[in-house]
Length: 301
Image (cartoon, rainbow, N blue to C red; front, side, top):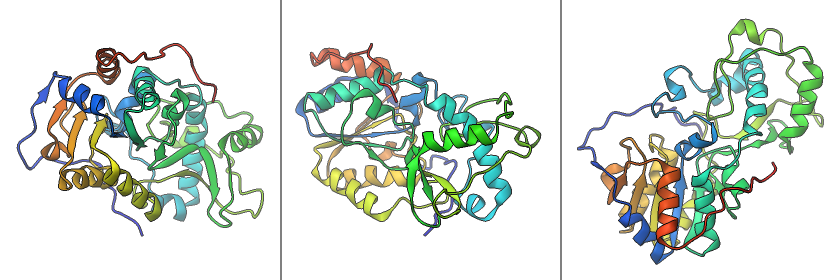
């Protein structure tokens, strides 16, 4: 089943005024049982841009859709050429203060779980355990024919060997690991098949227009049911894949708190939206709760 991509939204209700009061967030975390739902905004301080914030990639870039990828060899060449360059940057990114604060909250037993809409693996690199990758992860590749999974690093090595002279300079990086290249820069980039069956390889991520696997959705719904409250970090909640959990939490009478500089599609369901930078906000809350946040150690990925 495929969903029509939702790239933007226009508020139809009164926008929830942003606040700088971190008290409700600290109170919720202090009480424990908080389920975190994170979006691209938590990774911007690691050098990975978001989609819709100030300077977001959607202002210059249309993400790859599932339909285009599966039906067009040209689209696949364009994606893998651009994604090959993007992966080099993604694998060098390190967790920032926001990721590390979330990991610290988890270590101190304040979280019931972490769901991320991101595909960068930075929550895990920061030390968070049991992270549900709602949209998958860029560090894995799956064959659309035989279903075999393999490490992205293995494909990156093969692509490097097959495209030894491919050295264009991209105009920018996008949250899905794609980069900005012209068709001329893509050129005749060699796309490689599955080593087992010769089928089409796809990153293990949910493209725009593709549905999140039903069992993953149900697992996330269970996490919402078991949580005391829901804390949204750095997401506009434009797409339904994340918004549905906010709606579920609100319907079940659970407090929803959002830390995001700009208004979100989930604001009507939230008790408060904190309009502050994420790294500073979460480390400030950790300090109020007496929880140390390790800002130095970088995990190898």
